[in-house]
Image (cartoon, rainbow, N blue to C red; front, top):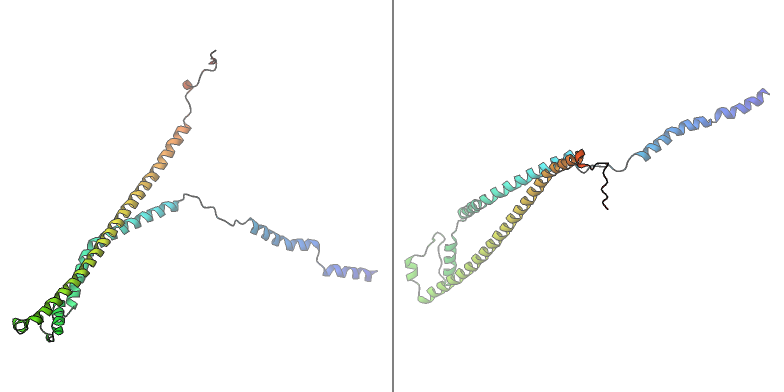
Length: 217
């Protein structure tokens, strides 16, 4: 009999009871429930304190950019003039002397590198045909330079028009943002007035007396 009991007890001792299984599964079940309850999205209110800071940063950046644009427009002319002066200083050879040298080479006359102007002696040694060739060459070069100048002037006018349109757009955007900011400042005042009018009770004198009959036949 004792051996039978010992045999029956041995399986129970090796196997776990249902209560132990429930105790082990309970933390897993609670963890699964917590994962289900955890929200997947975050509800952000429309108006928060960060909105005001964002607006302030935006308007600050806007004012900074406008100031930088004004300074750049004022300094653009001076910068272009300084750049032209630097280019002239870096340019060793005069463009006029290069034109004269090119014209003289067409008629077979060498022009020294150290000279920049034609002397009277060189001109008197030339015949009429050679002088006519030089004049025609200079006229053709003048026409080419005039065409280049006209192209640069047209490009300048286009840039001026583009600049004016950009300034108009900036001014319109500034007016729109100022009006929007002014409307935003007025909204809290209007809401307070509406709340005050809604909370004020009606006076007893405005109510009709209960004992009178207003149904007139």
